[in-house]
Length: 83
Image 1 (tube, helix red, strand yellow):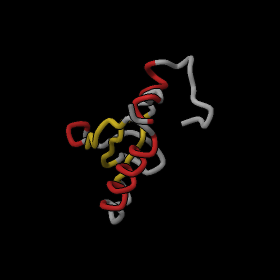
Image 2 (cartoon, helix red, strand yellow):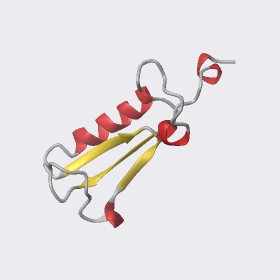
Image 3 (tube, one colour):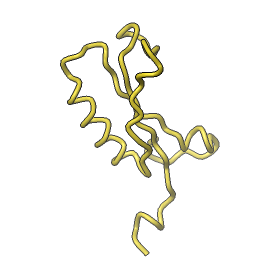
């Protein structure tokens, strides 16, 4: 059994799209939101987020986010590192 299968799975969602205002989190067009994927830990989600963010660096309105799904699924439990 690997170390990953022994540790608790902490799901993270990476998504992004063009925002109405760069200071907010409202997307211009929900039909064009890019669902990058769901990842088993923060490190893998961060790598996916970083790759997508770098691809869209020339568009100031485009933003990608990491959503901590494990916090929504089980808000009572938080890992010690806060991720």
